[in-house]
Length: 166
Length: 166
DNA sequence: AATGAAACATGCTCGGA
DNA sequence: TCCGAGCATGTTTCATT
Image (cartoon, rainbow over all chains, first blue to last red; front, side, top):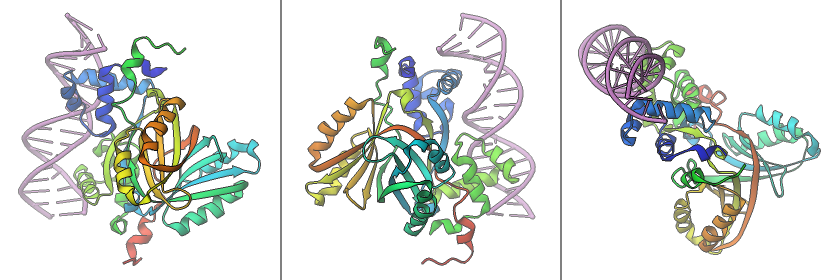
């Protein structure tokens, strides 16, 4: 796997930039005791490997009017047309995540809506027409934890040396 | 609500920086036909309002070894000590989201683990000791959609003018 | 709340180790 | 793979409108 090629410096860079995409690369360089050019090259490499997939500003959903967050499990009448359903879901901007899952549901969604009424509209007007046999909503009152992947604890060094997975 | 104070320029800025935190503010300025200083001031304002809560690089979970993503619903034996449980969950880095929810569960988690075995370890060794009466896991095979909040469609102009919510 | 200019800091590239 | 240097570019502040 790709992460076997990551060393301690890559890990430290990821740790620093994961939580602050605007941090100057020169500051990362100073924190790592290497040159700015080295950081530049490493980030280029991490991007080419597909480990870094871009950056984003974190926006508070409630502050821009999205007061309802919900997890919605779906079962399809015709599970054979997953792909069409997923394409349709991509055209619903309020659907921010869609997973193929084990267990009770064919698809599992995370949805942001302005309020509960808006959420119901989305489910009734946009999801139901996709051909659902069942849907199940869980509304989040409050996101008590919402943070990026753990970088510190990832198994980089362990994997770099001699673990063989191919 | 805070978003009532946002105008079209704020919205355009949010739209541009939400999907690329490294975009030069001067480039945003050119796209918006205003000065760089104006963008600087606007982003400062959006930060002070709490609408912008920082920035992050997007890292591909699988590429750094997190091959299992799961949603876990929890019920507590003693629902009165939510707060202690949440504090404990914050100390488990693999728990990236935790929601208070309606419906079947007291808490609803999103967890990243290296593999299914690691996920089971987390649930058995770290979650069970918190005092669970029940837990229910749904494993994601594949995240088909994973994207930020919709900015274009948010109800900014509609709210700015004369909607009264206080 | 926006501007332009100035001072300062960073991003990026290249030759060499 | 890294470094250092050079130049292009971006960031931030401030006086002004």
